[in-house]
Length: 418
Image (cartoon, rainbow, N blue to C red; front, side, top):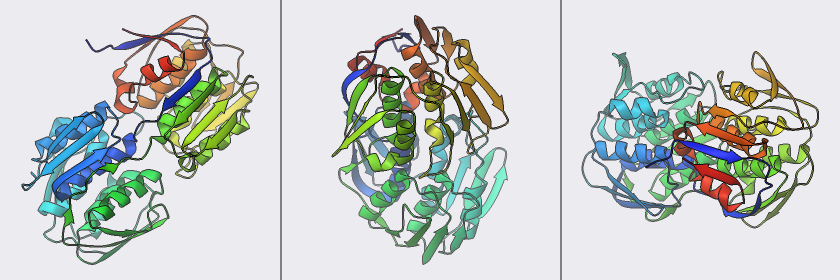
């Protein structure tokens, strides 16, 4: 039976070594891109997540045979994909909308439900649709579906209103097999964008500039299969594990990671007083004192990631002094605050800024996960809280963390799933 809650006894400093898993935010667009590749492709270092399973269901529903075994995904694609993405899958996971660009590029027609699957903010797909229009597609929204149509997408220059990760990925995929040259300005610069570009280039695409504000794509007629492509490490999981060590005043090392993907978070952790060592593909964090208060603001990469804001707030709840956290990306990303208050945290919200008055300790309580990263924040708070904390809604955590409870157990945490 699949456990639905975690029970954690706080107060144990984490110690030891664990390995980083593959990136959720990288593998999902890569799986979407595989719709455009004919033949047999394999991906390695794929995390075992609910979101990955949902995307595999999406591919199979679209006539793209995809399977997962032992952190390897095998994709056999030999027939024309369907043009209609299933309603339940797209509305259940926002990243499913990433199939829009590949389906449009391959079929000339796509019908995609408006996405759902996340409660942290509206995150409209307007930027995606404006980009598809610029590439020559007609866009119609009717009865909760987006219909995209264009026989031959044509390269152009597109200026994004905001460096949206999803829009950058969708437009980059669509433009990869369009006619002519496409220039995307003001794009997202996240490592996951570079990973997607690298995968597409191995498939025969001609993409330059990924990781910078301007991406240039020379359209090609078709893409080929890619064998054994390794997904990059998950920088958000890495940040969560390091913050777990910080909040418990522990000493852990995480192997198989890339420190350059986490510069802003590592800087923030050093500001709160943590000691960090980087060697090859391994990061070590250790500390034997309470964290210090800091002020920070979430920003697009290379700034402090919104996906690590909730976890950092949990850490600051036990810091010495008053901290402030400003959320500039998503309007509803303070949903974890009410649950942290149940554990004794002192947090005030004013518009998009949280003021956190650090306390010597938190108290165990019954709390509920409201979204993926909020769930991680509650786990961190539970690791340091006095007594027992029971965290409900474990499926949120399974969406984006590859067996986080087991990794915490490896590091000495007192965790029970039930």
